[in-house]
Amino acid sequence: QLVESGGGLVQAGGSLRLSCAASGRTFSGYSMGWFRQAPGKEREFVAAINRNTYYADSVKDRFTISRDNAKNTVYLQMNSLKPEDTAVYYCAASPSGYLPSRPSRYDYWGQGTQVTVSS
Image (cartoon, rainbow, N blue to C red; front, side, top):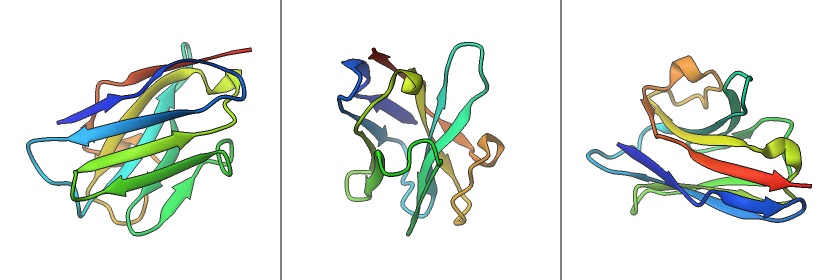
């Protein structure tokens, strides 16, 4: 089970840190990813981490993904937030070691946390 937290309302230019806590099993060998979905839009890739990291162009240099395997937790530090970052953010786990960006490559999903950036 994956449970996200840390979402909320923030002004443009602000920061938020999302957390994704895993329970019931360990995901230390999995690629962990963050996705987001805005109303009326498809779910889109944000970032992934295994031994390396991979980011969508839209968040590169603003967002940082990290993981603490001892705590079975993945984080997404979001800086310089923009109104277009507004979405429900989902954490996901994939058995692939190649940092997949397609949602279909992920087997486990959290319930999502809302991030709203006001202008």
